[in-house]
Image 1: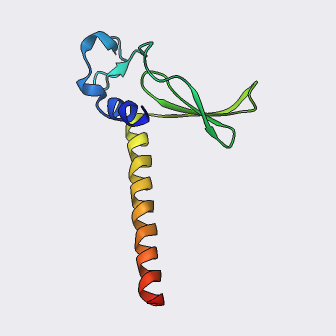
Image 2: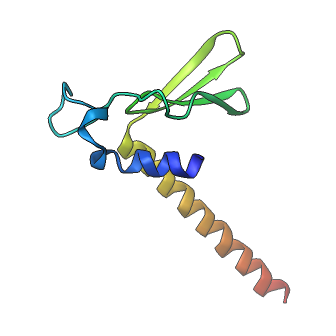
Image 3: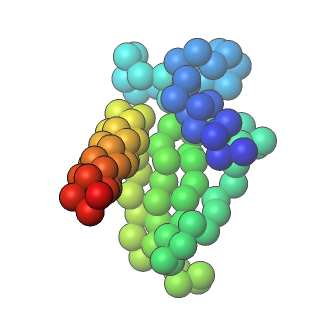
Length: 104
């Protein structure tokens, strides 16, 4: 379900017009209206919740009663985070290969 949702988010420009916001403030950005069937806010760990508001991936910290911090990731920032994660995985793999060669 997460993979489908992220794929859906990455392809926002290709979404049918009936679920995009025609009153976007920026003519170069399609702001989506959040359809009811999109994934709901969920707890991902360490007091962090994730949600999708129709345009941003929204991260909040909460004690379960009050949201204390809110970070809204627009598509370009979200993609930067994904790229960072891919780079991190590659660095870890490179470091592990280096350790394997040293111990072998």
